[in-house]
Length: 127
Image (cartoon, rainbow, N blue to C red; front, side, top):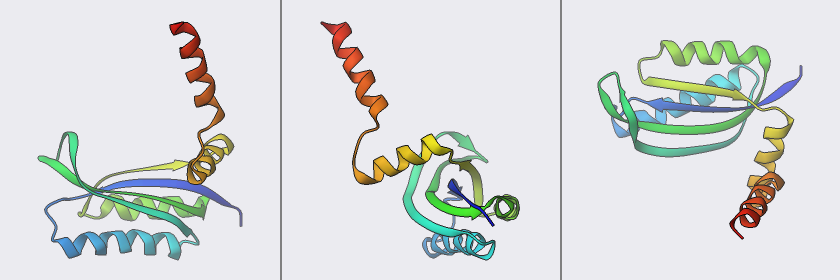
């Protein structure tokens, strides 16, 4: 079964107790692993201000994670997040080859070539 690379960002309801945030993160991780996925990286951003209110709340606990999973796993993962009360919003992105290359470069601490080209063009137009 072929696995694809995904990025999942979700917002947990900020009114939960501190220990409930960890339980919610563990719940998503378990969903991914139970559906044949493998977690690559988890980045908990913590409580952040929202750009606009959602469900009457101005803040949310943000989590961003990268994982590999078969395409069939995404449906059950998203369904469980959608029906759980502790999650406010979520977004799943399936990486294509360019996005994966950009991710690898970022992990190595390098800038993608496109950014270098744009900066050079900006410098030329400023002169």
